[in-house]
Image 1 (cartoon, rainbow, N blue to C red):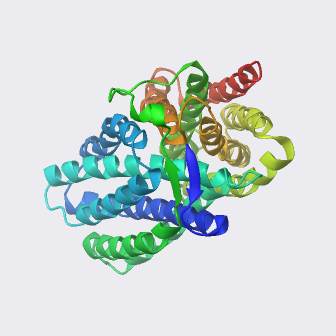
Image 2: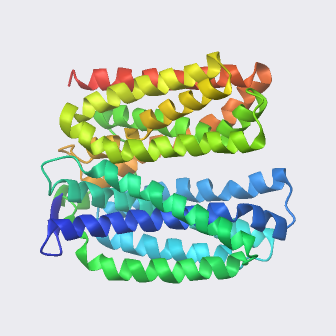
Length: 385
């Protein structure tokens, strides 16, 4: 894939891509911050809310083949911009839903647009990475995390002032869409390879080389999903921590993720991407096992921070490696790897609950820790290629 900045400066292209990552993180966290309010407004029980929320990943999964198809035929900058605008519009519509079925429909398309937006933005990050002789890709994901923190704080503030989600999301939509329009001109032009345009429209799973990257992404996203869904519950039920400490435990995890992403590029430049991935797997393994074997507040908090640091750079670095394959453009390669990765995010966290019911939460976390070994082993296998 040919990658050339539309602007006269790679730095401007880097800033533009960072802005789109910020938009993605800010928009998604804005939605997440108002879920309790929306649940209350629609009078949904926990079970009903869980069923409704499944519409978002369902939309995401259904759009994966479409995203791969589009990225084989058009520059990722256009798909990223269209995905961002649709993402912002769907976010706005979420705030105006009055009935449960409306929320389900909007969330489905919210998930679809998020997939379109995120994969094309990651393809853009690969294009910008090619303009530099050092690793810069992890910083984009760090900016996504920072945007999430800011949006969550803003959401909490607006909740305290009883601002309805409709006005909250409408304001965010206008602000983020305007930002996208301003910075779109500096995005990278990535032209799909000629042979990819001639391929049949049928979506194809990744080949053997990309499968290894896909399973690394699967392991990382499975661990991320587990931390997102179960970290606070683990602290509360297995460690018997207070509600405040349980919430703080997840916050410490997220701080470690953000810090790891800001340090990731420096580490990759110093030791290499494969070394970073190898030790990331070991950090995940050690951190989660520490939390499972020693269920105390200090050890669990430290373990979650280690896991967060280990998880911080796996997906960005895997996407970076996928973007360097010679037989496929960055966008379609990332779409293929993401197809496998998102299954980990969707399937594994619910399995944690099943294992916990059969045994206990400590066993669940210990088993998930083994995914860290899978990442390290897959990296070692790639060295043979």
